[in-house]
Structures are given as C-alpha cells and as structure tokens.
Length: 420
Image (cartoon, rainbow, N blue to C red; front, side, top):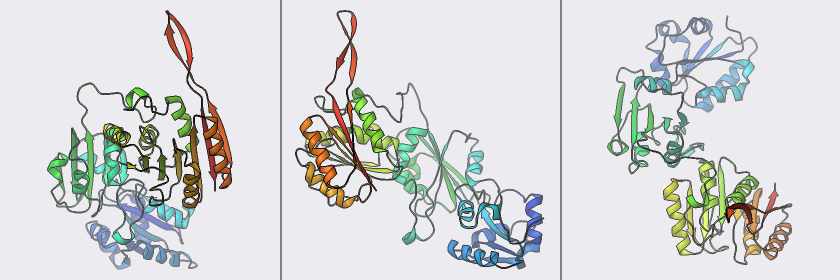
C-alpha cells in the first residue's frame, strides 16, 4: 500500500494503469497534473473516481513548492504526480528525485513517447542516440540544453539514428531547415502520439522544412548510408585527412597529447589561437559536440583551409575568425579552455586577455623553440597559472634501402597552465 508522506510519480499516456498505480491513486490524498496531462488522464477508467482529488498546476516551480509544503506536514497522505510517459526519460522524474530524495519517491513509468514513435515506424531503437530539445514553455527563461539544433547534423553523422524530443521553438521544421542540404536522410515526425488525432509523417528534410506540426511531437532521423562508406572516427584524424598548407599542421602524436592536456569539457568555449589548419579545433569539435570552438587565424589562405576542413567534417559547433591575436579576443565569449598554437610574438598580450576573461580553466601552448617555451612559461607564471611542461619527441618509421629505420621529427614542448 502507498506510504504517507511519500510522492508517487505515475507516467501516463499510452498503456492502462498497472495494479500498483491504481492502488496508489485510490488511496492518494491529492493528484497533481498539468492541464495537458489532466486532459490525457480524462480518458482513463480511473478518472471518475479520482477527479475530485485532482489539482492542476502548470508551472514546475509551483508544483515543487506545493509538494514540498504537503510533504512537510505530519501525517500527510500519499501524493501523486502525473507525468508524461516515462518520467525518467528526459522527464520530471530526475528533478523530483533531486529535489526530494530518491528514498521518498516512487516512480511508475508508462512507455516513453520516443519508444512509441520508433514502434510506429517499425524501426529498432536500441542503436539510436536520444536527445531532448525541450527547453521549457517560457522562451524567455529557457534552460540551457546539452545539445542544440545546430549539433544535430554532426550527431547524425556520428550515430546514424536520432530520436529527438521537440518543443514549440525547437520544432520539426527548424530541425529540417538545418538538414536540408544533407543527402540521404529519412525524417519522421510523430505528432500527438496516443491522441485520437495522432499522425506520422515521413519525408526528407527539404519536404518537411516548410510545414507546421501539432504539439507534442517526436522527430526521428535516420541516415541512409549507401555504397562504400569512408571510415568514421570520433578521434584520431590523420594528417593526410586534414587539408593543410606546407606541413603547417599539429602532428598526430602531438595533437593527441595536446587534447589530453586540455581535458575538454562537454560544454563551454574553447579558443584555438593561431589555428593553422584547424586540426586541434576539428578534433575537439568532433569529440565534444556540445562545446563551442572558436578558431582564430590571421592568414586568409589558412582561414579558407580551415573552412574547407569544417565543411568536410560537418562541425557546426566550430567557427573560424580571421584575426591576428590579441586583436579580436576581447569581443569573444569567455573561454573555458585555450589552445595557443602560434602567437607571433604576442604571447604576453594574449595571456593577459585570457587571464582577465577566464577565472578558471586550462591553457595549453605548443612551443617549437626554447625561446617560445621560455616566453610561455614566464607569461603563464606571471598571471598565476601553475605550469606543467611535457616534451614530445616523436620518431616515425620509414623504409630506406629496404630496411625499416626511425626518423625523428622536431621536438615540441606542450606547456599547460591551469587555475581555479
């Protein structure tokens, strides 16, 4: 039987209630629901017996405040919160457990809307990547999402199949608009699943971009891969796979160490100063789709090279700016990580700006000479960064007169400064 002073979260929308959920509803003191879920619950057999104990609250903060007050009462009866589908799949369940503690919460899920959507199109979903673009009903107060619409092309390229929860702002037409030029994409829009007016539409992004859809809806994207496919990797691009000018590229082995030293966050901002071919930025963008990467390069030809590489690898979270640092840095969003591949003698000025805009974070500087190494260490220490230096000496095998020999590359000093 339900326990007093306990919160029961019951998912509804698709299946009849199980026995445990019915027992909880029968003995509950109050049943909370949003307007939409109250309408959905009205189709259930249990509604007539429960309707006089229902309370409609539409804003999550108000719902939480009400629950908090009721749970604080001595001897308060069981409280039920109706949720959509599976409350722990991008739903209210996570917030409820965080607010009130797992031991005080019982969750009884229904099917998730994404699970229903994949079933409607007879598509396996165990190999899909799932994301929510539902940022809340109040656009002015929308919460930060782990992924944005601009990340979808890259995520689809990586995973091949996406299930997406949408909202009125991040809607199917907006998603389609970001994918119109991408070939071989099947797009499904599953509208109002479980309602009498449920609809399923299949089309290309181009066909869907100009249409409007009813809420709630789920989008499924599938990348149809035909013919031989180029090997895909999320980390470890070879020098030969990145367009670059006259050897001006961070060598593979050095790039791997550089990215390790940066300890990239899943979200935030990375500056790549003196980006060259953009190889470090490209790897970072592919590793962390939620990270915003800003590459600065002063040479126009190299900027064009970076743009070609960005197009080749579909990295919407990366941008390039033609500027000679420190010019342009003050106008950029504050970084969480900074990589300096080249500063043309302006290391001191660059790090002064970095120090002012980054209260905590990591700076990694690659130095090819002892002079630049000394400059980097001196400037980092002046601005309070504890310094760590690693020398990367790489030798690669090559055939000479039928024998395999090792040929050394120039050593590179990888300097790391971290604070906060």
